[in-house]
Length: 266
Image (cartoon, rainbow, N blue to C red):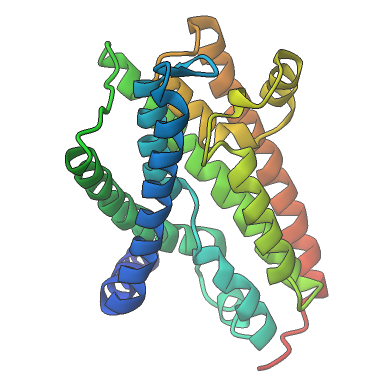
């Protein structure tokens, strides 16, 4: 347990140490938040509604998505590709440390810190622009939202970890990963509710076939209390199933990757 606690503290220390990069990363995120705020505020200003969402719901979705992007979408697993290429990955093969859990500890530290600042940023924007942030009518909703966000966090980490393992076979692993992250943010509903552009048939397909909407769209839909009780349980089942599927693929990639790994760069 001690190595993972050390990894957690190390990641936290790095975030605090490199203040300049941290500040500009948050400034960029704040710029995206303000831009989305004005866009969705403008399209819903005339009637107070847009695509089945009230103006207050849209604003709450935008603010919630900003927080979820910080809590769910991580970057620590990007280091794995460079470690495989320069050979430092070999250190994990001779130490009694689980590589997956080690990087998860680093990821968790970063997500909690960035999530904290995202909440502060949302609070500042809400107060500065005198906007509305809706709260659920039942306290039990917070429990379901927390569970959904945790599962989203785990699902993204497994997918991100798997994309980094492409480095076992290619030195250009960061290219596919960048494309994966770019597409995923749009498909997950990080910038707008997926239901705005999807037909009913497409929504059914997405609900049962793709994992992406469970990263941002589904937790926020639960928060806005737009998920019926029978579908609420089903959404958790599908999140769990996708985590199990991706974890199974990770295990297979790990085994094949170790056979392909040459320790180049040692």
